[in-house]
Length: 181
Image (cartoon, rainbow, N blue to C red; front, side, top):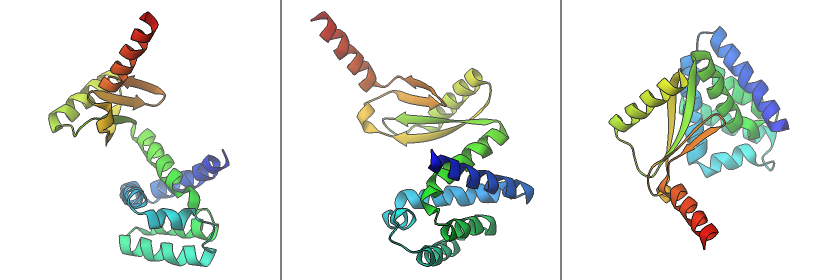
């Protein structure tokens, strides 16, 4: 709870500042790059989460990282402030909340899609069209690949979930057979 409150404050401040300076697209790009870097680098995750690194160590390391990544001044300043305040541990949540604020601002909704394999461009467009018609909003897809679902899709939009995966259908069939036998 405390983490989401802290992250929400930073994300809202970042969004407001970016909007005020007409830099939403730049900050969106920065946040996307930062999310990818955090996802790919165990060392970066350790740096932002470990209390073993001091304030100065985190600030210097993050300044170097933001510089090498070419992040804009708004994003770099936020990260510097978070390092100074010892709040880097909420950086992934800040990124997620910022992305949600931006989507809401644009009238978009993000659908988290899990597929067993890569979807073709035609399949992605068909899915977007179907969801856009159903939700009456612009849809952005966040696609993850999980071969364990065997086939089909799992689509999550907000609190709603549509599970057409073969794994789910097999589990339902297995449960039905237990009840019969």
